Amino acid sequence: MALGKNNKRKKRVRAVLLITLMIPALLITLRAVYAISMFDHVKQEMQASGWLSTGDDSLMQVKEDLTYEASYLLFKIGTVRFQVLNKKVYDSIPAYRSRAYIDSYSGIPFVNLHAVYESLTDARTFMCLFSSNSEKQGDSWVYTSYRFNPGSRSVNWEKSKDGKIITAASFPLDRPHTDGVSFFYYLREFSRDAEDRRTYVSIPMVVDTICSTVDLTINEKREPCDVAAFDFPVDSYHMSGHINFKGLFGVTGDFVGWMSSDTAEIPLRADVKVIIGSVVVKLKDIKRANWIAPRSADQ
Image 1 (cartoon, rainbow, N blue to C red):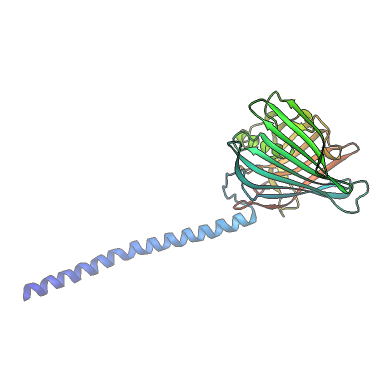
Image 2: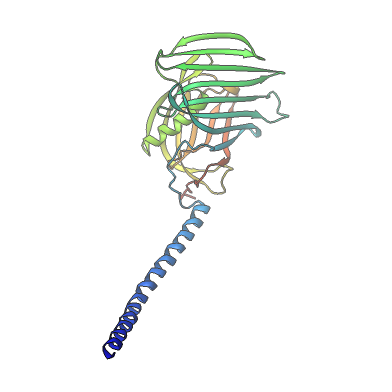
C-alpha cells in the first residue's frame, strides 16, 4: 500500500513539474501568436492605405475590370472600359476572352461614339486568335470580325451592317498580330517580363485590313502618377512610343504612358495625339481581387 501511495505521489509531482515547464513555453507561444496577429493587422492597414503591395503576381485575372476616362482639352469626353471575362479553349488553344467598351458622353459636340470590342487572346503568346467589334453608326450597328489563322499566317476579315455582310477579305500575316484589346494585355505581359529594365518593343497590330505596329520604349523612368482611382500617387514606370496608324478619334503618332511598377502592370494613364491636339486617358475605377496599387514614396 505504501508503495502504491509513493507511486501516485511521484506521478503528481511529475505532472506539476511538467505543467510548470509548459507554462513558459505556452506564454511564449501566445506572445508569438499575438505578435503575428498584430503584424497581420498592421500589414492589412498598410495594404489598405497603399503602403504595402499584396504580392499578387497574377496578371490576367478573370473579372478584372478597369475603367478609364478620356479628356480633350478641358472637356471629359467619354470612357473606355476593359474586362477579362473568362478563360476558355479556342481551336485547341487556351485563350482569354476580354472585352472593351468605348462610350462618349452625351452632349459632347462632334463626338458620338459607342462601340464594343471583344478579343480571344492566346494565353501563351498574348497574340490575337479572334477579334470582333460592334460600332453604332447612326441608327445602325456595324459589326467587324477578324479570324486569325496561325497555321496559314492569314486573317479572314468581314464587315456587316445590321446583320448583312457588306464586305469581306482575306490577307496574309508575316507574323502573329494583336488587335486593339489583345494589345492592351500583350503590353502588360511584355512589361512584366522586362521587369524594371528599359526595353524597346514593336508590337504588330491589325486595324481593319491594315497591318501596322506600335513602337514603344518601356521603363524609361520611375515616377509617381496621379489618377482618380486612388487618393495617393501610384508608383509607376514612364513609357513613350509611336502609333503607326490612325485609330479611333484620329489617334496616331507619338504618345506617352504610365504603368504601375508592380507585377500587375496596370496601365494608369496615356497621353495620345489626335488630329487636333491630344487626348488624356486616366484610370478612373478598378476592380481587381487581392491587389493594392503600389504607393509612390516620392510625394
